[in-house]
Length: 367
Ligand code: G6P
Image 1 (tube, rainbow, N blue to C red):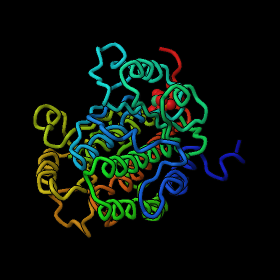
Image 2 (image 1 turned 90 degrees about the vertical axis):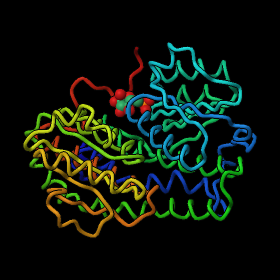
Image 3 (image 1 turned 180 degrees about the vertical axis):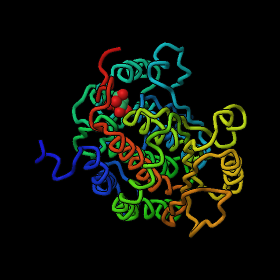
Image 4 (image 1 turned 120 degrees about the vertical axis):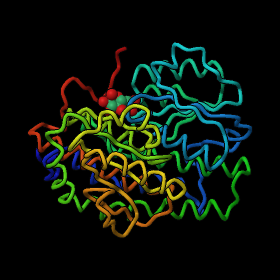
């Protein structure tokens, strides 16, 4: 009903706006004296000790949150992290040792493939942890430890706030794991956590700029295909951006590691094809920009997200959206909000109902 949407035309837009509060609710109880603390979740430090490697298992958006977690943890802590699609993991011989940590991620806590993957993982290791939104759900009950995200109920089929709090949870976990394994020191950790605490304030003004996004999606609604490109964390985020767009606007969208474009996808770039590019990672910045020039030269309609003050060189992009000046590891929180709004307005612009995409269910409890 309209009352439940609190004045928003759709649940999805309401839930996009709820993200700053949802992130605060999720991280605040897990920060003590500026450091990550899972006392409330009853996760002991021993859970993190001796962790040799991590496998993240999930489906859909939750799996893409895991991709961000993988890139973050692997580069920050030098611990091997694999992300497995739950429906694949279940039927493979898992390479899980007793010191392997398995993190299952699920908004609903009821996705059957993720649940079965967890049951399998429980046979191999005691280090199973669920990042779950719905309290008391099956996945929460069957994993050894649970980190509840506090997104609140998510009604729209396309996940938004549940994703950002899953990602935020990985940031907390990465920091805790790094401290327990002596991969980072307290000064680093406090700085990292302080930056994480600023995320809600950083993204709130971006959400208010929704009008700008609505304008630029007008160029996209007749597109057959769209591409999301980036490197590193920007690439992992692009996967979620592409999923959002295809789920609710039915525009075929793919995410590509920017450096991989020339091995196939660039063949699909022709006049006017939307390419949403993110260049927030300094260590690969010039590489992404040169990849973007390659698609721009072939006629793509390029929307670039970067921290630059302005980009006047029109051989790079058609539209530049400035990301707030945050440390590289945190830029993705800003970028994802823009991706969500692009998908939302592309859907609305096509006259579709973003809350109820065809053929999709909020929670998939059948195989
Ligand atoms: C369905 C939903 C997706 C969700 C996926 C995993 O496909 O439409 O939005 O990401 O299931 O759901 P879960 O509840 O396990 O996160």
